[in-house]
Image (cartoon, rainbow, N blue to C red; front, side, top):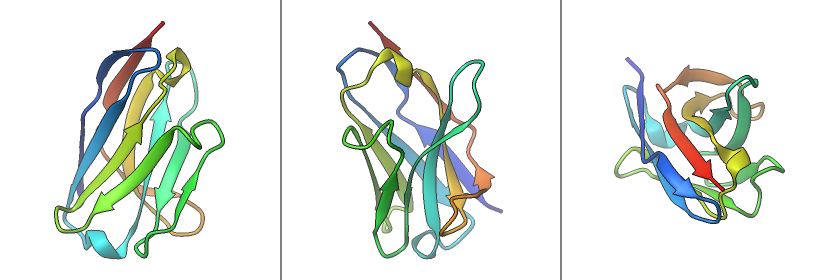
Length: 118
């Protein structure tokens, strides 16, 4: 079955960086679109970024220029490099297998917490 396991979250001061990882199994990772989402306390889940099997990426305006999505097909792992973190970036971050083209999530991981202090 599809499994997505995020890691790399933690606490960081404003201006700092973190790299999230998502280990994928149970499906052909290199043939599927993948994405990152986050959900802050009291807010709806927010799409952040997606990557297609051939490599093109998309970003939400809130993270464009600060976050970078990438993937290692040999390791079946998705990454999210997050730079210039701000307190508003505090949230539970999820990776997902998404529908190519509309980013609709099909499977979720359990999430990893990112906390940014000022």
